[in-house]
Image (cartoon, one colour):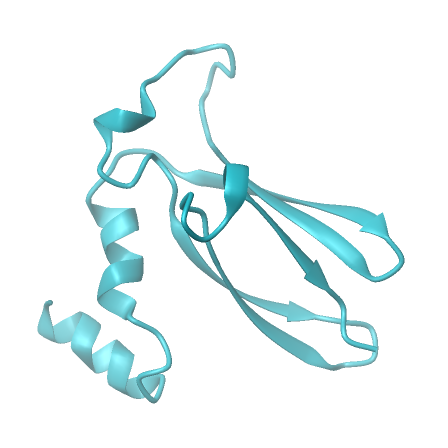
Length: 106
């Protein structure tokens, strides 16, 4: 891990593994698109897809060691000014089918 990532990790109080997050951004091509959809009540669905200029283009996710998914740190703000720290890492072991649900705090 580089000194830069170690410094950032220390600045977060070691809450996040910045090197692991940044590897998904620096060791593969492309950018993620995250969409948020209201499901019901206080439940939302976050979905990560790969940005492609032509959405009909085909690619093989196995070409990337990360499956063209990025680790994304989100700070979700709700109307009542409460905050929900939520780390979305779209890998099959964490998020099935690149989707993640969260429930807004009451």
